[in-house]
Length: 406
Image 1 (tube, rainbow, N blue to C red):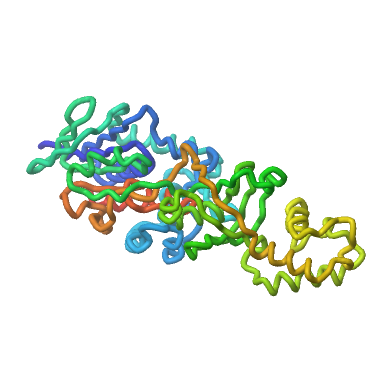
Image 2: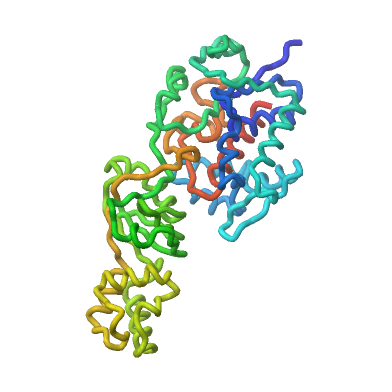
């Protein structure tokens, strides 16, 4: 009896997860992973600063889908089949317990991505899954009961194909998928920092982080809350990265040049900030302003904001005119900046775009156009914010795909 063969194109997180789960559920199937480069599981290696942010502590599927700017509707049915709790259980069964950090991110207790990589490599070896590196796919041809996969190492014959080549900025990477009839949504960057053009704040405050700010894109009616980091080139941190994901298309269309505002006290209204400042003045009439940051704002940031309101440190808080305090409140509430370009994380990049979701059955991750062709991971037009959500998409799509194939 001839064995059924499944070929997986892409040696990343979703590719390995799909291969392993097929083999665990049906050891009779022959499985081969084709990887274009010499590196396997490269994003797993560098994720979370080398610790691997496996998933996010969000067992509520409705809340979980809110972290995906694209694909959230489709992921609802997917997460009903395989979610965060399932991911945690799966890794625990393999001897890898995950820990939860304050912000909800989940990492292996080893704090080392190598433990995830070793787990996958050991399982592929144990399950006799073939891995071929430096194998680039050029074309796929569908026959009656099989596919011919044209590569730089010859033709690979397969009954089923799982395509999980990840996200790419260059649309040329998706050409062989387009050639077999699928629509590719133009890939553009997601998850990037906002650059400023030689702004004073970057010279004087680089390295400062603020626990909770609200950032608004003035022209697109989009906003984000969370922690933010001031860098020597602009702004980074969770709040910026989240906004960059949800505004990926809008920011690409304006060539990453637009105005935005920061509320340095998160979601507080202007009247609430004014009240806090007036209370500070009332309670510390004889104190110097720079020594008394409002609401635990970082001291250097507070000094910067006071200087923007033309408040000097050589007079007491009680001597500052009401007009200046109102101006300070307005700056804290609506501090304006101009974005001039972006910076992406070169190896941890995430893209918006990929295979059109309308052409995929999310109950199986099978193509609606070509039977026995499956997709999982970032190759499809799904992307999440930072914090383990993109890996959860990889695990869920790969598992559903594996069950359909096995």
